[in-house]
Image 1 (cartoon, protein in one colour):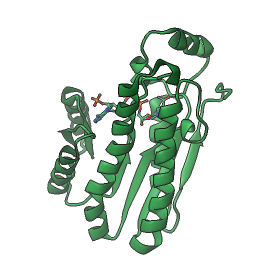
Image 2 (cartoon, rainbow, N blue to C red):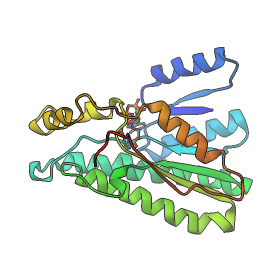
Image 3 (spheres, helix red, strand yellow):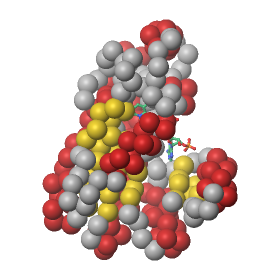
Image 4 (cartoon, rainbow, N blue to C red):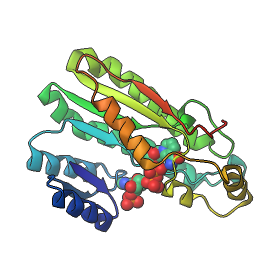
Amino acid sequence: MAIAARRIERLEAIVSQLESEGHEALAHRTDVTELSEVEALVAATNKKFGRIDILVNNAGTMPASPIIEGRISDWKRMVDVNVNGVLHGIGAVLPTMLGQGTGHIVMIGSIAGRRPFPGGTVYAATKFAVRALSWGLHLELGAAHGIRVTDIQPGQVATELYEGIPESPFKDAWDKAWEGKRRLKPQDIADTVLFAVSSPAHMVVSELLVRPVDQAT
Ligand SMILES: NC(=O)c1ccc[n+]([C@@H]2O[C@H](COP(=O)([O-])OP(=O)(O)OC[C@H]3O[C@@H](n4cnc5c(N)ncnc54)[C@H](OP(=O)(O)O)[C@@H]3O)[C@@H](O)[C@H]2O)c1
């Protein structure tokens, strides 16, 4: 398994743990907004493992950004990470998967890719784009090239994503709405990915909406 993000020290700690459990793993410092860095990740993965069976396009950012506040740099950042980053992953891995005649691309979309929420209009737009890409990729790469594509659409998951929301009445209201409620755990989404990629070769799990029982939206 190869894992990639910008904070290499976190990745290296995970790789050490995986290796101590007997797995082979690679940590690669990658900013998904830079195509050259994603291409370098793919090259390093091919060098170590000789093939790439699964790409999980996971990196994303959500600095909730009510339109009325006009934080255009936040809007552009979301497009850059959540859409361009995903495109870089697809473009970089495609030659390998086409050469293999098989592969599975997993997108981490969002429930927001089905339904925008106030304060998350641009974020939702990026996740609608991920959903459209997933659908289109299936049409272009499925039957013709043996590449499967899954769009997993989580609801609320307890992660660091929400730390990107600046202190504001919006954030206070969000935190209050979730007080005492159960969110999903990152492991729930990892298990969902595993379910999707474990399906038999003739089948593709195209979309999965996964949300906490306590999520009333
Ligand atoms: N948490 C939720 O409720 C929820 C719900 C629906 C969908 N999602 C989606 O789930 C995915 C994962 O988010 P999360 O909740 O796990 O958030 P998170 O805890 O903030 O994790 C985001 C991950 O993306 C990486 N990342 C961010 N920008 C990057 C960049 N430019 N290049 C490379 N890596 C980058 C981060 O690592 P570095 O900072 O070290 O680069 C981190 O590993 C996202 O696509 C998000 O939109 C989350």
